[in-house]
Amino acid sequence: MTSCRKICCSLHLRKPRLAAPRHLRSGRSGSAQRARLRPIEPALSEFPIDLWARIAARRLRRASRSLLAGGEVQGYGPLREAIADYLGTARGVDCTPDEVVILSGAQQGLDLLARFLLKPGDSVWIEDPAYHGAVDAFRNAGARLVPVPVDGDGLDPAKALRACSQPRAVYVTPAHQFPLGMTMSLERRLALLAAARHSGARVIEDDYDSEFRFSGRPVPALRGLDRSEAVILVGSFNKLLFPSLRLGYLVLPQSLIDRFLALRYQADAYPPAHLEAVLCDFIVEGHFGRHLRRMRELYAARLGALRDNVTHYLKGAVELPDIQAGLNSPAYLVNGMKSNTAAVRAAACGVEVRSIERFVLRRRDIQAVLVGFPAFTDAEISTAVIALARAFEK
Image (tube, rainbow, N blue to C red; front, top):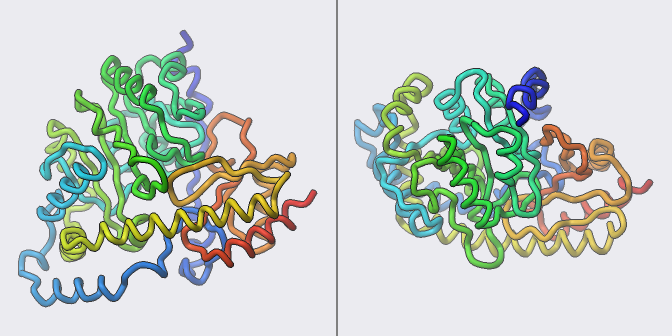
């Protein structure tokens, strides 16, 4: 069997991407840089900001000394209770508040987990293509990445085992694979859990936008199927509500909590307790659930508008897969154009799509760009797709 070291060494030696995105380097705000079809952007104009402001003002007026003094390292207790209740109802995850840790978002969770779980040289199965933030977190921890090409059913544990039989950790986005959008099949989920049990690997489940499922029954989280405490669930409110909220969570096995909190204390001793309390009220009073239901309907309609416009204006150049969830969709280039070329041409027309090359590790068989739709009206989507039709002419 090919060793993990031989398969991963060339990837491990590649230099990590250290440069910040251009809009962050420029110091200008995201709103000033708003471009059509930008991926991974929620409909911020639809967020009930007046309601949020009233809840925040009420919380501030009633704030106790303990709330203002600094938060608990594990996070505000009532918010952890609200998250545990929500996950049990909506995601099929049976967990207690004591297993929930509040963080600034998924990226902080991935960074801390990489340092917590891995030693330099440890092997990590990772989807190919994959979320670049996870790739960077594991590389920064000195891990050896084992890329596993995803297919229509997600990551294939059988292929992963042939590549590396003893991973220390596994990173997956099973509900809505990033960036290709498929859902991991039940057969693959069970096989992955069995492989994790056999190898002793921890499975990091990034559940980044599964709440936005547009058809069919909600897909339970992988963590809900786990009976051996192998899965660590990563979730975020930043994509569900608004990015500057900077609140997310982990659900860890109880056996790991104390050691993880010791590391978290070193990195970030005082979470924003007041903001956590505002989010807690927003959830407990039912506003969170209502907002999600309204956004599901809106995003489904906007995805439909994107599909209709692509079929009308980009037939023969681009094909969209039948995704059923999320904040973005891959657009496969069927006209022979390369991913990077397409992204550059789109940008020249004022449309921000992302080349799939940003997310691949080893494979070179995908030519596609990632497009967003939730933040844009039907008219904006139509205008952007017409611009892409001009940009993608050969």
